[in-house]
Image (cartoon, rainbow, N blue to C red; front, top):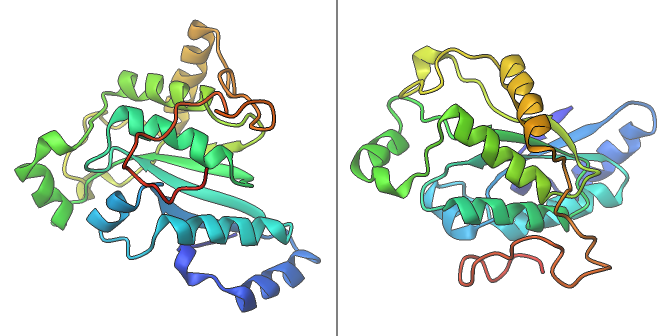
Length: 214
C-alpha cells in the first residue's frame, strides 16, 4: 500500500506499480480531501480536483486498487456540499474510501483560522457525525469499500477532543447500530447514472466547482 498525493503520480510511476501488481497486491491511496477547488486552495493543498480525478482514473485503468481519503468539516463547506461529494466520487472508478472528520492540530494556521472564523467550519458531535456518515453512505455507490469512517490523532496534538477518547472500533460499532436503527444501507439513495441523469444524488451546488466531472 502506497499513500500519496494525486499530483505526485505520473505515467512512469503508474507503470511501475502496474508491473508490480502482477506479482504483489498493490493499493494506491490518494489524499484527495475535497472535491472542491476553492476548498483545496483555501487549505493550501497545492493540487486541484482535476488532478485528483485524473490520478484516480489513470490508476484504476491499470487495474490497480484505488483508494481515496476524504475529510469532512473543512472550512467553507456546508453539510449539503459535503454530502454532494458522494455523487461526485461515485462517478469515478474508486475501489475504496477512507473517511475522516476534520481534526485541527495545535499550532497550525488552521487552528488560528478556526479561532478567528469558527462560523466557517461545520463541526459535528459524535452522534451528528454518525448520522452525517450514514446520509453520505446512502448516496454513495454501493460497491465502493469503506475502509475507515473516522480518523484518530493522538489527543496531545489536537486543538480539542469533542468526542472524548473514543476509539475507531467503538465508532464503527455505534455506526452499525445507527444503520440498523435507521433501517438503511450504503447505496440506498444511489441510482446508476446509466439509468438516471441525476445519479439519485444531490447535485453539487452551482458555482462551487464547475470543473468537477459531470
